[in-house]
Image (cartoon, rainbow, N blue to C red; front, side, top):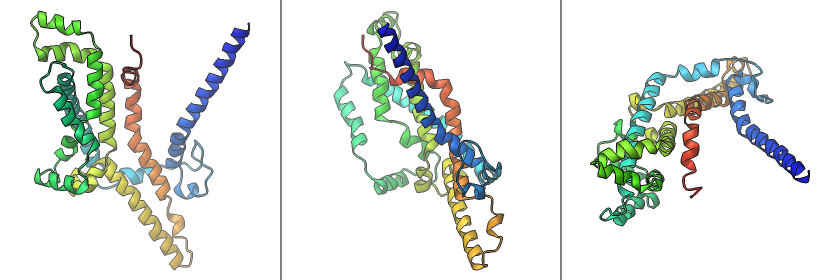
Length: 299
């Protein structure tokens, strides 16, 4: 009886704790969603929780009607697809090679690949390098620099080494070469870690905006994140201009005509930027959980 009471108490405390975590995790996102759907001038007064008090689509209209929004969206989608595929190919190939304990110079390759992880050349040398490689104002500047990540390679290599060696030995006996072993045996058995790395790569490409800021000047190559960053800055500038006009005109009704504020536009950009990832994650959740738990339990 005492054990049953202890178990019930533990279950109650565990459920309450998980509910608390859910609230803490979901509330900020729901609050930003409510702010993005609320009138900007009304949001200034505060008190917005998880539902809009004065519903409006103006914040999203401001974001979507920005010049170059459609083009930047296509550029971002193409970058995510190309960057994720190329990254998976290179990282998986390197991980499979490094997983071979009899690989000549294996330790040298690991040491060579780990150096950029700890030592960075800085922004100015990187800028000069990209310029000499003719990557400035080129789409490949989004893809090539992020094509290989040492940490992701280690994750995949660890998973490959956890697979039974007998699988590879049997394939070799049957006459399979290295490419057949990799694509027909290793990769199908490594879908959890592949999905995890794919999600990490996709999120990294989707959220990056500094590459456009530093290395791109052509508007046709701007990514969605950078365009939305500019939208927020433009909204802040418009708000400052309207406040200045209201002050110089003696507090006329000009400021009351503005229904969009920097905070409301910022909330709309947050929703637009995170919505694709939020929609993608549920389909990869089961693989993601398995992937991040690699090595946590050993037989």
